Length: 484
Image 1 (spheres, rainbow, N blue to C red):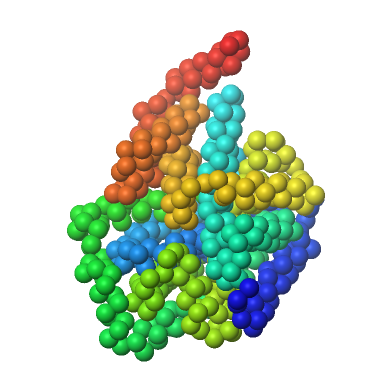
Image 2: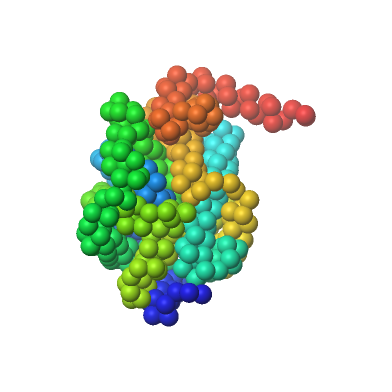
């Protein structure tokens, strides 16, 4: 362990505050109420905006975004800007309507939201299918967060990958099991302020270092290639526009299809309070994402030759900055990764418990804790087997969930005409279209989430008649009852 003792102390103070927030949430919980799964649906705009944004930030921001900026340069600024377009569209239309429908339906999970006012075998199939899609791909997404945590702890303390992975996973699983959903929101809000401080500090320090280096900084950047600072280096204006629009679609899909995010809007105390969180969410998400990408770009000139650019943030501070500032950055990186991992564990456990096992009546910690502990073990083990880096795993999982679920959520939230059969076709069609698009290698040009949403809306429109619902339910019932 080579980290400065002062930096380690600052980091462990953050851990104590995190566990304190989780314990406080446990004491405030109402275990006899099924509404405790969404903290009594009482979140204000600050908790909604900060909790959703920190959960959405993910380990990608402090690993993947830094790595993309370091390796690819200014073209990767187009990713958060494209996401901004999607977020503006999303917040203009959906969060207040999601909250209103959630209050009306008493839904806690996306499966419950989608099957509201539906009945019969088709509704059951939709519920199980959506739950399975979420559990599989959210587990992959969670595993990408464990990989980000492994890079962080391994880089800070110079310990083996396995030790870093187990240590990071154990800490987050433990405080997630203590606090539940309410604890997740409280801890997210605390970690948002750590994230703001860490972002400002990181950008200020790396820019100061670049300024102090003078011409040597620009010489290092020149070695990165003539197009490193060109945002259109990836193929010109048309390619950049397609790239941004694809990720705008991914942002809409993310807001509609990720239960760890949607649950924050569903838990708002009113549609008006939920809608009012828009500027908190967008300002926090964009400022931290853009700042970390810029950090990676500048770091290329300050400290060239980093073997794994995704470790650049913690590596730079450990080697070049004082102990207290380094401790703040350690706390920042931990907070960013932990808030997403925590939200994902809660979302997956609720999906399994409520949608697959039917345990909906009581949200007691005695029931929720074992699910979170088991999920932690499974997803940590999964991260050991999955290939790829944090960026590829996170984006692939997010995109496939959005393609499969977001179109159906749009149909439900906007009260578009549909039947059980047409909604099922929309889910299967959206997922299949995205899978084909990704398999054809077109995702780098235009994200598959937008393709899946478009396919889902089209299929629902073509099959939304009552005849389709009746026919499909009859066929499904007959198929189930026939011996195979």
